[in-house]
Length: 278
Image (cartoon, rainbow, N blue to C red; front, top):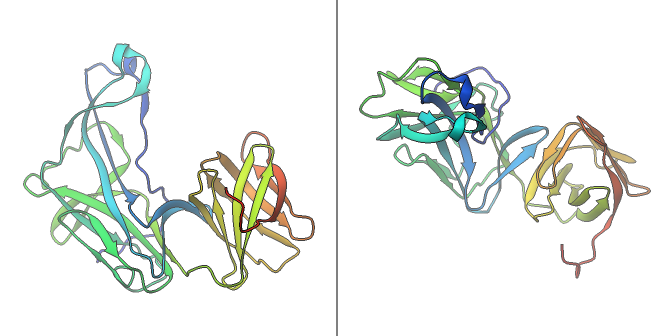
């Protein structure tokens, strides 16, 4: 595996919004590589950094995604997203380049395999932990002569196994969580623009946050036995919450955030009855 320095990153592909009038020609180049959550996995906020989240004992998969090629500017020369025209990658080959910041020595999370033909990692995780990768892709035929000119560069070139790869600039976390313990307590929180489920796991010292769509949105390590359960940055959607700090009062159930921008959120959390529907 290729070792790289640890940097924070996003798992999703960025949406490029530009003004068409800013370009003299009728097309432009964009390059980005990321990871996408498949069945059994979630794209979630993990202690303030977004990544792929899975659970021990549950079958899951994630895959390498990319957008590398030429794009048309927004119609009419106005602002908007780039329109795909042609891809530089005709016959893809994939790899996961291991990051030196990973907490585990294994190439892949135990129980998961990886296909260089499809870019898919799948299986049933058997061990909790955190791994960090730079997902990478290349064209099997023309991979040694890639475009290197002007454009939107969310990826970078690297050499591994005597091949040139386009990899994500930032490392992306892949996290395998232990199953919720018997000491996990589900809370329902409501308030101003707040509609969340919180699962406080006293055995694992974890708080799982579920968005108002019912899906896992965030995972945070915290001292859950303190009077105030607190953690740092939280960026989740939906609902759209971008907080620099979060605090949950165990005595009163009060839930408050410090906003990175906009109005801070506050609400009240209470134990969720088993018969309630979210």
